[in-house]
Length: 180
Image 1 (cartoon, helix red, strand yellow):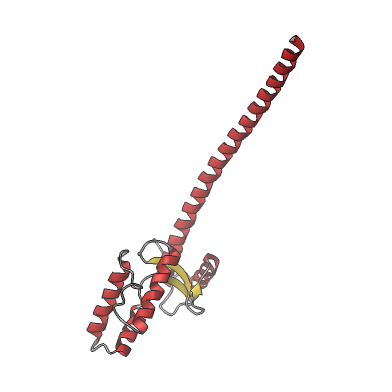
Image 2: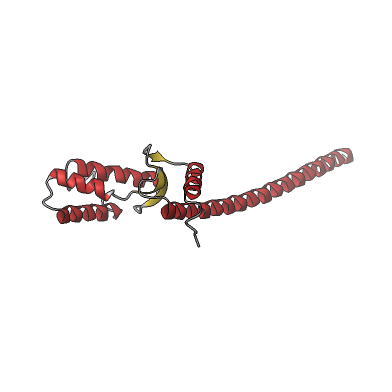
């Protein structure tokens, strides 16, 4: 009987040591996970800060005909919208501007869903639907989101692309623009 008890005690001690070892490994993994999460958050914050600086630099240096710039995703392109309104028969620029502002207001309202109720027809409706798809893609509610944009190729630009373009613009202007 004492042999059985002795064997059981050895097995319990062995299992307890194994459990303690695994508990220590789990604590180490949890510590590493917390450290990595903190590091990822800091890197994300630094990247966001760098992107804001890049947007600011592009807005200051790049002209309206620049290849790469900042595009407000989800905001109506007033020039295109006004042209569409004129094609649809808007009487004057003021009326077309009023319609454009009304559409921009409607887009910004989360409860508004134009696929249920159509206020206008034709090209203007297609533009609004496109902007709603942009809102959904960039996922910031119904607020315009700044995005790096390659205007010559009509696509989103990478950060590296924008930095190279900004450096070319800066060299071409020989540091004429100094940000404070």
